[in-house]
Image (cartoon, rainbow, N blue to C red):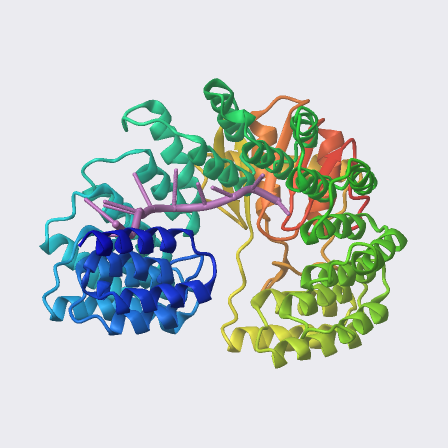
Length: 586
DNA sequence: ATAGGGTTAG
């Protein structure tokens, strides 16, 4: 008796300490030999060791599990958990099958069973499975388990069922900070970024009974970055300072990103400078920010400083450096860096790096070279790469190559509405009007839906949204009045609307061609209406800005004395005194 | 005596 007890303890501690698979096999043999396989506790410990990381040997675990005469809830849970953590989809499904088997065999289910099974379903995006588990939770009266409810929310939002996730949230009786954070992440995941900001406001107001924590801030900063919501971001920053969250390196890094993605490179830089410890992420965030804001030379310089500081760059750093080169036309520098990625830093260039190079060569007019680079790639070029080249073909009106590129996209079955728009603009800027008509006809017949352009502008903490020819703003008539007035003022100053090269929304109607009012123009008109001279207007657009709106902004900046900062789909335009930081190179 | 929730920064 005493010796078997001794043996039991010995085996348990051996299980804890063993690091090699062969030891695990030996222990297994011992367990069986000493009849300890009838000891549920020992078996559970052993199963957990085999099934869960670091071993995570599902084949072996399944063998152990299948030999069990009547597995307990805990043993089932361990297996389901192990399945929920594996990368293989087929195995993830096994987790749900075990859940069903438990029910069939009348094995009691506990909250952990549900939790692990939902994770399997979430990974598998198995909506019906999750719904079943949800039903089981309600039947067993576990719906007041807050932890379980957040898992469920996460599951529903991962399946794109935001409404269901919100419903679970509403039904959660005790909502703690994590629950609110999950709600925010549900919104972010489903593109409801502004609602995520509203949640933050709600939490700060105190009516929810819990305050934002560091995770909340991280989420909300990301939301601000994507919405270009500078004032909101500053408020979050202030809140973080109050709460002492702004010391953590990850939060500071995301502050750098937020400020640079809101066009505020000086603030981003201040944060960066104030950091006692800077890691790869900090440097990369800075470099990418500089690149995006058109400070290519500074970005390269930051990269050199980073190397001098002894921080090793990784793949993402190079994406930042190369995009700096492409946005600023630094062709030779870009080629040099691209060479070094492999040779000096031992990193295999990835698809993003190639994308930057194609962009770089393409914008610089070296279209054939870009095409050859694509053909020389080890991996199969994806649609983004071809799309980048198509963009360059449009800029340089290279119709023959453009047609070849669109065929590559069609071959990949990846042609998007935006690609046809590029094609359209390419033809129109080359003056090939029959082709323009042809593409238009094709788009109409095939119901190609283009992404509507949308511009946002934050003023006094309020986000205003404008689409093309938008009439939904409360001050709509004033805005159009202002726009007409501005138009005539600008024409006096020499502004000529550019309608030939950009077809964007030039619509053929019975009365002829009509230039539509892009959201950018409406936003600027509104900005001039409600702000005094000297103000900075910050706009963000979901697509690329068109040449005409760009011209318009340049004239506005000098005639109306406003600095206009426009965030594009891919970069910033800092427009002041009639000039843009991009030097018309984009 | 499986031990559970969210997300990690670029």
